[in-house]
Image (cartoon, rainbow, N blue to C red; front, top):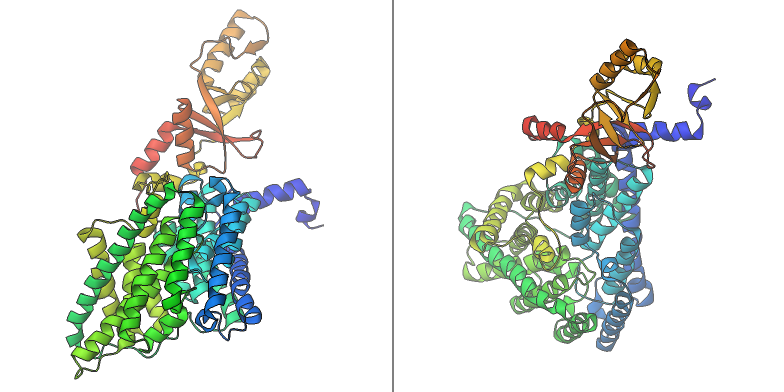
Amino acid sequence: MHPLRKKSPVKLQQHWQNLIALSDNQIGLALLALLAGLASALVITLFRLAIEWPLIYSFGLDNPEHLEQLSQWTRVALLLSGGVLLIVIFQRLPPAQRSVGVTHVLQRMELHQGYMPRSNMLLQWLAAVIAIVSGHSGGREGPAIHLGAGTASQLGQAAGLAHHRLRILAGAGVASAISASFNTPMAGVIFAMEVVLLEYSIRGFIPIILASVAGAIVSRVVFGSATAFDVPALDMHSLLEVPFILLLGLLAGVVAAGFIRLMTQLQRLNSLPLVVKWGGLTLTTVLLSLYLPEVLGIGYDTVNDALAGKVVIGMLAGLLLAKLFLGAWAAAVGFPVGLIGPTLFIGAALGGLFGQLLANLFSSLPLSVGFYAMLGMGALMGATLRAPLAALVALLELTANPNIIMPGMLVIVVAGLVVSEGFRLPSVFEAQLGGGHNYQLPQPVQQMLRNTWVAEVMQQSFVSTPVEITTEAAGFMLQREPDWLLLEQENLIMPPSALAEALQQQEADNNSDRINLLKIPADREPVARISLKANLQDALDLMQQHDLQWLAVYRDNELTRCAGLVSRTHIDHFYQYQPRGR
């Protein structure tokens, strides 16, 4: 009979945990990430269909983004009903359950090891569908990132993943979300590591790449192989355009800084009731849509028109200002839509406006308006999100043109420097989280400790023992040459040398054949219990909380099967001598 058939369900579960959850086995994590990528992409596909189908089949639109085809009163009724419904839903929830979007993901990754509540994820799905279907100005990528990370996190929690691996799995869900949203698998990988995990690590690349590929495959099966935008053939025709590209980078940096600064100013509205700050946003959207209906919804149809040079200068300027104001307001007050889409919209409008002005001023030069619109998208994304490499890779994948790399690098770097060095502003996500949230970017040592499994420094040379033992049992324990004796009931450890001395004394005095380990002279250390799922930062936090030098690491959730011991000295030695860039 095959050996696996003899295993009980409990032993099979333990075998699964040893292979996938409570180990550093990369094959197991890669397979789990592939499954998470597929699951996340399916959830995001349902999310996207829940937005598109009502607009196509209930309102008769030929394209779910052509909200301007609806009558004016239909658009107003949709916006008002959607705004009221969202206010009613969120008003009934406690503040902790209202948290959604990319900022929620960043908080849970930073403060909760990637554990994401199912309730917030379901709320994000419902709220974003209502907001976007009703025409509110915002993107679907931010909600998709929450849904992707949440789906992967739920899968990891069900599998009992260790904390350092759960964070990677949640990052894999983010990569799948970006990949499925834009059909840009490389950008999904870079975004997950650059914005969410805040590091590039060898152990993270393989699972995140697999998840991103899975997201792209599901997206192409359902929605086809086209990217999110209809990008015409673009190119820089002459090196004479380099000064124009530099100028566009400066302008994009100023606009990105203005977006972030405006959002931080509008965060003052958070002291007002929900009905005021969200109701005010809804009414403002209604007023602007009376004159600029193209500002409604995601707006990728307008972005495509800007890339094709079909939007006139005056319209581009109006849409740029309107989208910037509505996007900053929504981001400031936590409205359940994304800000990546508005960032791309603003960038396309800025680049298209800049390209048309150049074409009018320098009619003798073969300038492409779409080329500058695409560069504007990359510059705004890179500077606003503080994700330059993700923006550059997105440009490459969206255009499928390597000639975009050099001008893209130039415009993205200039725009990023204007925001970070010229205006001294953080990324828009950091600015959002700074508005009353308890969040700080991790320091390098802290980041390394969070990414290191407690088992990597765990000492396994110990023997568990009851308080009272026979001299025969003491002899057997000492023959195993342990480094420590663990008194599990009392949560104490002691050196075996104390037992050896007591045993010698017992034999010399010919006393009782039993030894009480609490009554013999010894240097005993108190220990607290911690799960084998923990990382080194968890262990260090617990030691500091209870003022301890030692922890007993337990394999199961009930903390009844001790796997080893870890000390503060072990952790200090690890981060002092561990090579960086693991």
